[in-house]
Length: 105
Image (cartoon, rainbow, N blue to C red):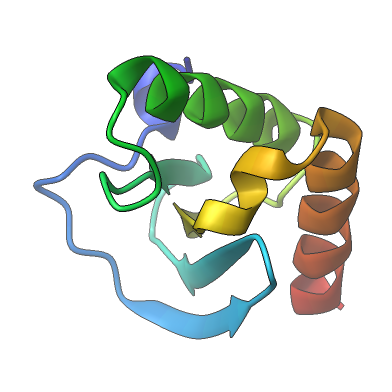
């Protein structure tokens, strides 16, 4: 779980400027006017009906996001696709890092 300052809550509607998609998820990135980067992970019931599985994939994605080292002042929403369920943690971590680095550079 992220610290409160790093969570992108449902009440906040960020101005997401860039969006890109991979086989495992869609990432939407934008700027904010805070000193913190804020993150949100969305896993729909279409991915899996079981809350246990949805929460597990959220924990994996959050752990991967914590290691990305995104610069302060950014918002990121990760929308997980069904194909991510069959992947290993290392594959998801590598995929997220590559996509975030493409956006930053």
